[in-house]
Image (cartoon, rainbow over all chains, first blue to last red):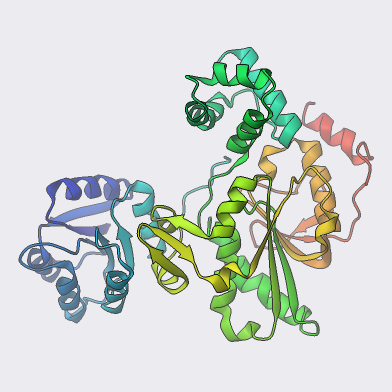
Length: 129
Length: 290
């Protein structure tokens, strides 16, 4: 079973992301900030992390740094999902080991496309038109 | 939408673009033309049809554009671009080693995602193509989408469909919520307005033709005719790439499938019957129940 840890301080965003990712056959766990997310990863390393940037306690960028230094922390595909839409943030995230980057606002098509990019969702069958 | 309105739209689309809608595509008309109705300041498709019947050629042109403009995104379907990188270009590097040039045609270039995906793929191959001259010609029926393609400017939504983030960072420049593809990639693509129903021999001869998700709109006879002309616009050892839902099989023998590569075809060396109504045509038309 593919698992995805959804990390966002907004319960609304977590709920939307959960619904989309469950449709893509992920089993979802949630965290409200980077510190909770790190604890969750230490308990059980997920297949993927959907990661907000700006959160209280520990932000997504700092979490990513810690995650990549954990044993097995190189395994999860990390997809940022944030309103930080500037090239500078994207470059920093990639440099820190993010695999993909979603600029909010997002929808189901974007999430599916990005999880295809990291190889966790199969390409859809083509419709005619 | 009333049945007479639907029939009227079918006929107009067939005459102007070759688009051949089957009897059950009302949803497609509604999804494409309701936004256009609003743009034209009328409440629905019935009123839009009245305007068309009133002889407004600009409305007719907009209807044809709205119906034939296909959804597109970067690296759409992925597989054709793997064929391009792993099969087509390596073959070309061998077979064109003497002349060091490759001509590529995107026959339904639309808003530019496909030609620019090819341009990025070529850039990513780096040194292998150093000193080569690669031309990408993007054509489309719609001048509106060609203008967008030329500008190379995409919304945040568009750059998140199919484009790996590394390529966004590498090849685009951000301007607020918009992203523009780099000048060096824009310079790799030439744009021309073209209706595939009309003669395209003036474009010259190509090594690679991407003709994806456009022939699905045409009836059998038109498809056969276009395949014949595509074969004549292609080098004998060139490559044709079709959309995932498209094939030459059962329609024409001027192209043959490339083994084990879905959507990839090569000229067979067989010449198409040049006049409509050639030997093979009535049989195929009969098979299609027409």
